[in-house]
Length: 141
Image 1 (cartoon, rainbow, N blue to C red):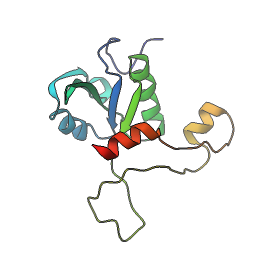
Image 2: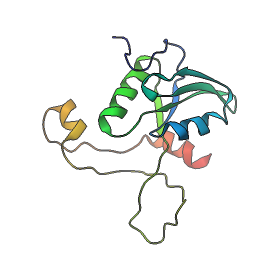
Image 3: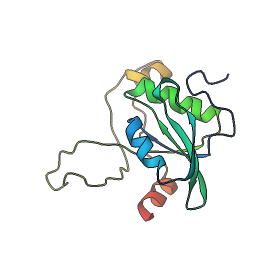
Image 4: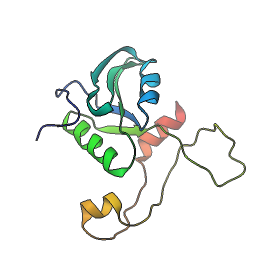
């Protein structure tokens, strides 16, 4: 099956992909890449590929909501993406967390249903925990 929203060819997307909901944020992130190339702007799903510290990286916008990010991740996987890091904003309930702080989550919870119900077919709670090695690299860098 070929992607229908991200109009790029296999090989144009790096194995390492950073995603963000906001196309403006993706534009800003792409500006720190060496020789960023815009490989998609269809449906405002901006996708840039370039190099960061000598490593080939793709940065992609996924828009708002679970269904939108599901479409983008599925199509990026079809195009060669394998490791995904999401860069975004979040609210905090702890007073100690100052506005503008960087948070690297090690787990998450969610309400039953939504996109997981669509894929699994029933209300089940799946573990939402990132890959330890990838998380460690994010924290170290």
